[in-house]
Image (cartoon, rainbow, N blue to C red; front, side, top):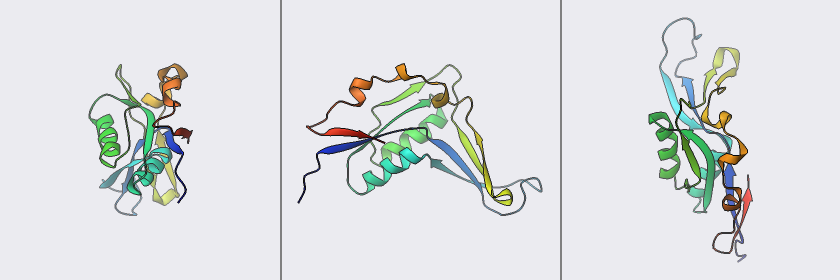
Amino acid sequence: QIAMVWKLVTMGEAMLRFAPLTKKPMDEEPHEFLRSIAGDELNVAVALARLGKSAEWVSVLPEGVLGDVIFNGAAAAGVNVTKVVRVGNGAELGTFTVLPEQATVHYQRRNSAFAKHNVETFDWKEVLASRDGKKPWLH
């Protein structure tokens, strides 16, 4: 058996995804939506955690209930969220809505906490430091 000598660290924006439960055009009537957590890098970390592997996720989330949904969901899935930075000052959470009739999605992320962060938000020496003798790979 080959010893795992690396650890995966993912970095990226997570958003809330809204998908209508019907295929009716969005402008016809009020819709019910399925709300879920989305974000490629977080999805990779969750998949690894579910496979019993160690995975960390680095990101920026707003303080408040919507940021809590993402943060708590990632933690409940077994992802290490100790490097997730929480910010206030009117920061928002990015969202996207699936538009089936147009076969596309509509993003709202211009004012998201992640979109407004800068490289100094993170302690990169800490993010990329070896852990338990394992070198992190950044995704």
